[in-house]
Length: 387
Image (tube, rainbow, N blue to C red; front, side):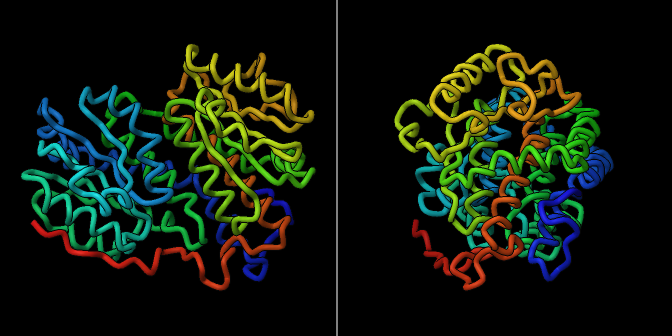
Protein backbone atom coordinates (compact mmCIF):
# COMPACT_ATOMS: atom_id res chain seq x y z
CA UNK A 1 0.00 0.00 0.00
CA UNK A 2 1.23 3.50 -0.80
CA UNK A 3 1.71 5.37 2.45
CA UNK A 4 2.40 8.98 3.42
CA UNK A 5 5.89 8.19 4.60
CA UNK A 6 6.98 5.52 2.18
CA UNK A 7 8.06 2.10 3.44
CA UNK A 8 7.28 1.73 7.13
CA UNK A 9 8.93 -0.41 9.75
CA UNK A 10 7.70 -1.34 13.19
CA UNK A 11 9.80 1.56 14.53
CA UNK A 12 7.61 4.05 12.64
CA UNK A 13 4.67 3.25 14.87
CA UNK A 14 2.30 2.71 11.93
CA UNK A 15 3.21 -0.70 10.52
CA UNK A 16 0.25 -2.57 12.02
CA UNK A 17 -2.27 0.06 10.97
CA UNK A 18 -0.87 0.31 7.43
CA UNK A 19 -0.91 -3.45 7.01
CA UNK A 20 -4.40 -3.81 8.45
CA UNK A 21 -5.84 -1.21 6.09
CA UNK A 22 -4.14 -2.81 3.09
CA UNK A 23 -5.12 -6.40 3.93
CA UNK A 24 -8.86 -5.74 3.86
CA UNK A 25 -9.61 -6.85 0.27
CA UNK A 26 -7.91 -10.21 0.85
CA UNK A 27 -9.71 -10.66 4.15
CA UNK A 28 -13.10 -9.84 2.60
CA UNK A 29 -12.59 -12.65 0.12
CA UNK A 30 -11.78 -14.92 3.04
CA UNK A 31 -14.90 -13.79 4.92
CA UNK A 32 -16.95 -14.64 1.84
CA UNK A 33 -15.47 -18.15 1.86
CA UNK A 34 -16.06 -18.55 5.61
CA UNK A 35 -19.73 -17.59 5.36
CA UNK A 36 -20.23 -19.78 2.29
CA UNK A 37 -18.67 -22.76 4.06
CA UNK A 38 -20.87 -22.11 7.11
CA UNK A 39 -24.07 -21.57 5.14
CA UNK A 40 -25.79 -24.83 6.09
CA UNK A 41 -25.20 -24.43 9.81
CA UNK A 42 -25.95 -20.71 9.68
CA UNK A 43 -29.25 -21.33 7.94
CA UNK A 44 -30.15 -24.06 10.40
CA UNK A 45 -29.65 -21.53 13.19
CA UNK A 46 -31.11 -18.41 11.54
CA UNK A 47 -33.99 -19.55 9.34
CA UNK A 48 -36.32 -20.75 12.11
CA UNK A 49 -35.76 -17.44 13.90
CA UNK A 50 -36.25 -15.18 10.89
CA UNK A 51 -39.43 -17.08 10.00
CA UNK A 52 -41.03 -15.78 13.19
CA UNK A 53 -43.06 -12.66 12.57
CA UNK A 54 -42.53 -11.33 16.09
CA UNK A 55 -38.72 -11.61 15.98
CA UNK A 56 -36.68 -8.53 16.90
CA UNK A 57 -33.08 -8.36 15.72
CA UNK A 58 -30.72 -6.24 17.83
CA UNK A 59 -27.30 -5.35 16.43
CA UNK A 60 -24.92 -4.50 19.25
CA UNK A 61 -21.31 -3.61 19.94
CA UNK A 62 -19.26 -0.81 21.44
CA UNK A 63 -17.57 2.05 19.58
CA UNK A 64 -16.68 0.97 16.07
CA UNK A 65 -18.60 -2.28 16.58
CA UNK A 66 -21.72 -0.22 17.33
CA UNK A 67 -21.26 1.62 14.03
CA UNK A 68 -21.24 -1.75 12.23
CA UNK A 69 -24.81 -2.15 13.45
CA UNK A 70 -25.73 1.35 12.30
CA UNK A 71 -24.43 0.66 8.81
CA UNK A 72 -26.30 -2.65 8.60
CA UNK A 73 -29.63 -1.75 10.21
CA UNK A 74 -31.52 -0.15 7.29
CA UNK A 75 -30.57 -2.83 4.76
CA UNK A 76 -31.22 -5.79 7.05
CA UNK A 77 -34.61 -4.41 8.10
CA UNK A 78 -35.63 -4.33 4.43
CA UNK A 79 -34.15 -7.72 3.60
CA UNK A 80 -35.52 -9.58 6.62
CA UNK A 81 -38.88 -7.84 6.82
CA UNK A 82 -38.45 -7.84 10.58
CA UNK A 83 -37.76 -5.23 13.22
CA UNK A 84 -34.02 -4.56 13.28
CA UNK A 85 -32.48 -2.12 15.76
CA UNK A 86 -28.88 -0.99 16.22
CA UNK A 87 -28.28 -0.61 19.97
CA UNK A 88 -24.79 0.09 21.29
CA UNK A 89 -23.75 -2.42 23.94
CA UNK A 90 -22.71 0.54 26.08
CA UNK A 91 -26.35 1.68 26.06
CA UNK A 92 -27.65 -1.82 26.59
CA UNK A 93 -25.43 -2.45 29.61
CA UNK A 94 -26.30 0.90 31.19
CA UNK A 95 -30.07 0.58 30.58
CA UNK A 96 -31.01 -3.01 29.75
CA UNK A 97 -34.66 -2.67 30.71
CA UNK A 98 -35.01 0.38 28.49
CA UNK A 99 -33.15 -1.03 25.48
CA UNK A 100 -34.92 -4.39 25.79
CA UNK A 101 -38.26 -3.09 27.03
CA UNK A 102 -40.32 -5.35 24.79
CA UNK A 103 -40.15 -8.96 25.89
CA UNK A 104 -40.29 -10.49 22.42
CA UNK A 105 -38.19 -13.24 20.83
CA UNK A 106 -34.87 -11.56 20.08
CA UNK A 107 -31.80 -12.34 18.02
CA UNK A 108 -28.89 -10.44 19.57
CA UNK A 109 -26.11 -9.99 17.02
CA UNK A 110 -22.92 -9.08 18.90
CA UNK A 111 -19.92 -7.55 17.13
CA UNK A 112 -16.60 -7.71 18.96
CA UNK A 113 -13.01 -7.47 17.77
CA UNK A 114 -11.46 -9.01 20.88
CA UNK A 115 -14.56 -10.17 22.73
CA UNK A 116 -12.78 -9.20 25.94
CA UNK A 117 -14.16 -5.71 26.53
CA UNK A 118 -16.39 -5.64 29.63
CA UNK A 119 -19.56 -4.64 27.78
CA UNK A 120 -19.28 -7.44 25.20
CA UNK A 121 -20.03 -10.30 27.56
CA UNK A 122 -22.23 -8.21 29.87
CA UNK A 123 -24.61 -7.30 27.03
CA UNK A 124 -25.32 -10.94 26.21
CA UNK A 125 -25.72 -11.87 29.88
CA UNK A 126 -28.13 -8.99 30.52
CA UNK A 127 -30.20 -9.90 27.47
CA UNK A 128 -30.51 -13.43 28.86
CA UNK A 129 -31.56 -11.98 32.20
CA UNK A 130 -34.10 -9.44 30.92
CA UNK A 131 -35.72 -11.35 28.05
CA UNK A 132 -37.72 -14.57 28.13
CA UNK A 133 -36.23 -15.77 24.84
CA UNK A 134 -33.00 -14.58 23.27
CA UNK A 135 -30.68 -16.17 20.73
CA UNK A 136 -27.13 -15.00 20.07
CA UNK A 137 -25.19 -14.59 16.85
CA UNK A 138 -21.66 -13.69 17.94
CA UNK A 139 -19.41 -12.25 15.23
CA UNK A 140 -15.89 -11.84 16.54
CA UNK A 141 -12.28 -11.72 15.40
CA UNK A 142 -10.82 -13.51 18.42
CA UNK A 143 -11.41 -17.21 18.93
CA UNK A 144 -9.77 -16.98 22.37
CA UNK A 145 -11.84 -14.02 23.51
CA UNK A 146 -14.20 -14.45 26.42
CA UNK A 147 -17.28 -13.79 24.29
CA UNK A 148 -16.41 -16.53 21.80
CA UNK A 149 -15.47 -19.02 24.50
CA UNK A 150 -18.60 -18.47 26.60
CA UNK A 151 -20.97 -18.85 23.64
CA UNK A 152 -19.16 -21.61 21.75
CA UNK A 153 -21.21 -24.49 23.15
CA UNK A 154 -24.47 -22.79 24.09
CA UNK A 155 -27.53 -24.23 22.29
CA UNK A 156 -29.05 -20.80 21.57
CA UNK A 157 -25.80 -19.28 20.33
CA UNK A 158 -23.83 -19.34 17.08
CA UNK A 159 -20.26 -18.05 16.97
CA UNK A 160 -19.08 -16.85 13.56
CA UNK A 161 -15.30 -16.39 13.66
CA UNK A 162 -13.56 -13.96 11.37
CA UNK A 163 -10.15 -14.64 9.78
CA UNK A 164 -7.42 -14.47 12.44
CA UNK A 165 -5.75 -11.60 10.61
CA UNK A 166 -8.80 -9.41 11.20
CA UNK A 167 -8.04 -9.24 14.94
CA UNK A 168 -6.26 -5.91 14.43
CA UNK A 169 -3.09 -5.36 16.42
CA UNK A 170 -3.18 -1.63 15.80
CA UNK A 171 -5.04 0.68 18.16
CA UNK A 172 -7.99 1.45 15.88
CA UNK A 173 -10.35 -1.08 14.36
CA UNK A 174 -9.96 -1.19 10.58
CA UNK A 175 -10.10 -4.66 9.04
CA UNK A 176 -12.02 -5.99 12.05
CA UNK A 177 -14.80 -3.46 11.39
CA UNK A 178 -15.15 -4.22 7.70
CA UNK A 179 -14.85 -8.00 8.10
CA UNK A 180 -17.51 -8.23 10.80
CA UNK A 181 -19.87 -5.93 8.91
CA UNK A 182 -19.46 -7.91 5.70
CA UNK A 183 -19.94 -11.22 7.53
CA UNK A 184 -23.23 -10.06 9.07
CA UNK A 185 -24.45 -8.77 5.71
CA UNK A 186 -23.68 -12.08 4.01
CA UNK A 187 -25.01 -14.21 6.86
CA UNK A 188 -28.29 -12.36 7.35
CA UNK A 189 -28.80 -10.83 3.90
CA UNK A 190 -28.56 -14.11 2.04
CA UNK A 191 -28.23 -14.56 -1.71
CA UNK A 192 -28.99 -10.90 -2.41
CA UNK A 193 -25.31 -10.22 -1.70
CA UNK A 194 -23.74 -13.06 -3.66
CA UNK A 195 -20.64 -11.79 -5.44
CA UNK A 196 -20.57 -8.44 -3.65
CA UNK A 197 -17.40 -9.25 -1.66
CA UNK A 198 -15.31 -9.56 -4.80
CA UNK A 199 -16.60 -6.27 -6.20
CA UNK A 200 -15.86 -4.49 -2.94
CA UNK A 201 -12.40 -6.03 -2.77
CA UNK A 202 -11.49 -4.87 -6.27
CA UNK A 203 -12.70 -1.34 -5.51
CA UNK A 204 -10.72 -1.20 -2.26
CA UNK A 205 -7.59 -2.47 -4.02
CA UNK A 206 -7.88 0.39 -6.49
CA UNK A 207 -7.74 2.75 -3.48
CA UNK A 208 -4.99 1.16 -1.40
CA UNK A 209 -2.72 0.49 -4.38
CA UNK A 210 -2.98 3.97 -5.87
CA UNK A 211 -0.34 6.67 -5.45
CA UNK A 212 -2.89 9.12 -6.88
CA UNK A 213 -5.19 8.41 -3.93
CA UNK A 214 -2.36 9.17 -1.52
CA UNK A 215 -1.82 12.50 -3.25
CA UNK A 216 -5.51 13.45 -3.15
CA UNK A 217 -5.79 12.51 0.53
CA UNK A 218 -2.70 14.57 1.19
CA UNK A 219 -4.16 17.51 -0.73
CA UNK A 220 -7.23 17.53 1.50
CA UNK A 221 -5.02 17.80 4.58
CA UNK A 222 -2.46 20.22 3.13
CA UNK A 223 -4.09 23.20 4.82
CA UNK A 224 -3.66 21.54 8.25
CA UNK A 225 -7.41 21.66 8.98
CA UNK A 226 -8.65 22.08 12.54
CA UNK A 227 -11.94 20.31 11.89
CA UNK A 228 -13.20 17.58 9.57
CA UNK A 229 -16.84 16.75 8.88
CA UNK A 230 -18.12 13.43 7.51
CA UNK A 231 -21.67 13.32 6.12
CA UNK A 232 -23.82 10.50 4.75
CA UNK A 233 -27.40 9.31 4.55
CA UNK A 234 -29.02 6.00 5.52
CA UNK A 235 -26.32 3.34 6.03
CA UNK A 236 -23.72 5.96 5.12
CA UNK A 237 -24.53 7.94 8.26
CA UNK A 238 -23.15 5.00 10.25
CA UNK A 239 -20.14 5.12 7.96
CA UNK A 240 -19.73 8.83 8.71
CA UNK A 241 -19.79 8.07 12.45
CA UNK A 242 -17.09 5.42 12.06
CA UNK A 243 -15.02 7.75 9.87
CA UNK A 244 -15.06 10.51 12.48
CA UNK A 245 -14.09 8.06 15.21
CA UNK A 246 -11.10 6.84 13.17
CA UNK A 247 -9.80 10.40 12.83
CA UNK A 248 -10.31 11.14 16.52
CA UNK A 249 -8.58 7.92 17.55
CA UNK A 250 -5.56 8.02 15.27
CA UNK A 251 -4.91 11.74 15.80
CA UNK A 252 -5.20 11.37 19.57
CA UNK A 253 -8.13 13.77 19.55
CA UNK A 254 -6.08 16.62 18.07
CA UNK A 255 -8.19 16.89 14.89
CA UNK A 256 -11.84 17.55 15.72
CA UNK A 257 -14.03 15.18 13.73
CA UNK A 258 -17.81 15.42 13.43
CA UNK A 259 -20.36 13.12 11.75
CA UNK A 260 -23.97 13.70 10.76
CA UNK A 261 -26.53 12.87 8.13
CA UNK A 262 -26.66 15.05 5.04
CA UNK A 263 -30.01 16.52 6.09
CA UNK A 264 -29.30 16.61 9.82
CA UNK A 265 -26.13 18.68 9.49
CA UNK A 266 -28.04 21.93 9.02
CA UNK A 267 -29.91 21.43 12.28
CA UNK A 268 -27.21 22.66 14.61
CA UNK A 269 -24.06 20.62 13.84
CA UNK A 270 -23.23 22.96 10.95
CA UNK A 271 -22.07 25.38 13.65
CA UNK A 272 -18.77 23.44 13.76
CA UNK A 273 -17.64 24.91 10.43
CA UNK A 274 -14.94 27.55 10.26
CA UNK A 275 -12.48 28.60 7.57
CA UNK A 276 -10.14 25.77 8.56
CA UNK A 277 -12.67 22.98 8.08
CA UNK A 278 -12.81 20.25 5.47
CA UNK A 279 -15.73 17.99 4.63
CA UNK A 280 -16.17 14.50 3.18
CA UNK A 281 -19.61 13.68 1.79
CA UNK A 282 -20.45 10.03 1.12
CA UNK A 283 -22.73 9.96 -1.92
CA UNK A 284 -25.57 7.44 -1.82
CA UNK A 285 -26.12 5.08 -4.72
CA UNK A 286 -29.88 5.49 -4.22
CA UNK A 287 -31.04 8.14 -6.74
CA UNK A 288 -33.57 9.68 -4.33
CA UNK A 289 -31.27 9.79 -1.30
CA UNK A 290 -28.41 11.05 -3.42
CA UNK A 291 -30.24 14.30 -4.13
CA UNK A 292 -29.93 15.31 -0.48
CA UNK A 293 -26.22 14.47 -0.52
CA UNK A 294 -25.79 16.62 -3.62
CA UNK A 295 -27.65 19.52 -2.00
CA UNK A 296 -25.45 19.62 1.12
CA UNK A 297 -22.34 19.21 -0.98
CA UNK A 298 -23.25 22.22 -3.12
CA UNK A 299 -24.07 24.23 0.01
CA UNK A 300 -20.75 23.38 1.66
CA UNK A 301 -18.82 24.33 -1.47
CA UNK A 302 -20.46 27.73 -1.23
CA UNK A 303 -19.14 28.21 2.32
CA UNK A 304 -15.72 26.56 2.41
CA UNK A 305 -12.52 27.30 0.44
CA UNK A 306 -11.92 25.53 -2.86
CA UNK A 307 -10.69 21.96 -2.39
CA UNK A 308 -12.09 21.72 1.14
CA UNK A 309 -15.12 19.59 0.18
CA UNK A 310 -14.73 16.16 -1.39
CA UNK A 311 -17.21 13.46 -2.29
CA UNK A 312 -16.73 9.72 -2.16
CA UNK A 313 -18.78 8.41 -5.03
CA UNK A 314 -19.42 5.37 -7.20
CA UNK A 315 -20.73 7.62 -9.97
CA UNK A 316 -18.08 7.44 -12.67
CA UNK A 317 -19.39 10.67 -14.19
CA UNK A 318 -19.19 12.51 -10.87
CA UNK A 319 -21.79 15.01 -12.14
CA UNK A 320 -22.53 17.68 -9.54
CA UNK A 321 -20.36 15.87 -6.98
CA UNK A 322 -17.23 17.52 -8.32
CA UNK A 323 -14.37 16.61 -10.60
CA UNK A 324 -10.75 15.55 -10.32
CA UNK A 325 -9.43 15.68 -6.77
CA UNK A 326 -12.84 16.80 -5.44
CA UNK A 327 -14.53 13.49 -6.34
CA UNK A 328 -12.93 10.38 -4.90
CA UNK A 329 -13.99 7.31 -6.89
CA UNK A 330 -15.34 3.92 -5.87
CA UNK A 331 -14.81 2.16 -9.20
CA UNK A 332 -17.29 -0.36 -10.58
CA UNK A 333 -19.65 -0.05 -7.61
CA UNK A 334 -22.50 1.63 -9.49
CA UNK A 335 -25.77 0.12 -8.30
CA UNK A 336 -24.29 -1.55 -5.22
CA UNK A 337 -26.42 -1.00 -2.13
CA UNK A 338 -25.12 1.65 0.26
CA UNK A 339 -24.67 -0.92 3.04
CA UNK A 340 -22.01 -2.63 0.92
CA UNK A 341 -20.66 0.58 -0.60
CA UNK A 342 -19.73 1.68 2.93
CA UNK A 343 -17.10 -1.05 3.25
CA UNK A 344 -15.00 0.20 0.35
CA UNK A 345 -15.71 3.85 1.13
CA UNK A 346 -14.40 3.59 4.70
CA UNK A 347 -10.92 2.88 3.34
CA UNK A 348 -10.68 6.56 2.38
CA UNK A 349 -11.48 7.59 5.96
CA UNK A 350 -8.89 5.15 7.30
CA UNK A 351 -6.26 6.70 5.02
CA UNK A 352 -7.25 10.23 6.05
CA UNK A 353 -6.89 9.24 9.71
CA UNK A 354 -3.54 7.54 9.09
CA UNK A 355 -2.07 10.47 7.18
CA UNK A 356 -3.39 13.04 9.69
CA UNK A 357 -1.86 11.03 12.54
CA UNK A 358 1.56 10.84 10.92
CA UNK A 359 1.44 14.54 10.03
CA UNK A 360 1.08 15.29 13.74
CA UNK A 361 4.10 13.19 14.64
CA UNK A 362 1.98 10.51 16.31
CA UNK A 363 2.32 6.73 16.19
CA UNK A 364 -0.94 5.43 14.69
CA UNK A 365 -0.48 1.96 16.17
CA UNK A 366 -0.62 3.59 19.62
CA UNK A 367 -1.66 7.25 19.52
CA UNK A 368 -2.19 7.28 23.31
CA UNK A 369 1.16 6.08 24.70
CA UNK A 370 0.28 7.22 28.22
CA UNK A 371 -2.66 4.83 28.22
CA UNK A 372 -5.56 7.24 28.78
CA UNK A 373 -7.41 5.45 25.94
CA UNK A 374 -6.83 1.74 25.39
CA UNK A 375 -7.14 -0.72 22.51
CA UNK A 376 -9.32 -2.97 24.70
CA UNK A 377 -11.40 -0.81 27.03
CA UNK A 378 -10.34 -0.77 30.67
CA UNK A 379 -11.69 0.78 33.83
CA UNK A 380 -15.32 -0.35 33.45
CA UNK A 381 -17.05 -1.55 36.62
CA UNK A 382 -19.99 -3.84 35.86
CA UNK A 383 -22.88 -3.63 38.31
CA UNK A 384 -25.43 -6.33 39.06
CA UNK A 385 -28.96 -5.91 37.76
CA UNK A 386 -31.45 -6.99 40.39
CA UNK A 387 -34.82 -8.40 39.44
